[in-house]
Length: 69
Image (tube, rainbow, N blue to C red; front, side, top):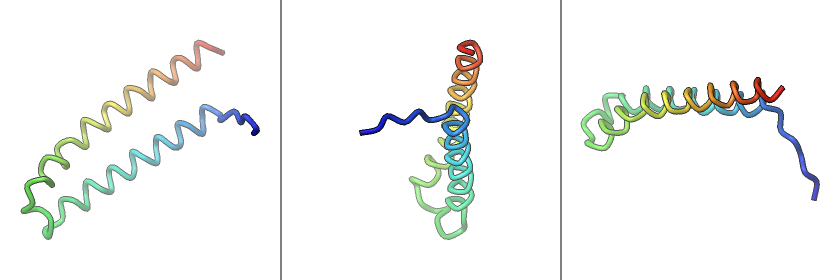
């Protein structure tokens, strides 16, 4: 089995794709057809906090990689 080294830039691109998917999901959840559901309100309210956490972890990752170099 080959061990592959993934570039830090590739990891950060994957994180940005996940963040974009969360933004799209948040907009789709707030559509009129789902707006009356109880779970939609909690999920839509949690998305900004998840994005903030992902952003904070990405900044820590980038700082660690810069200090490593």
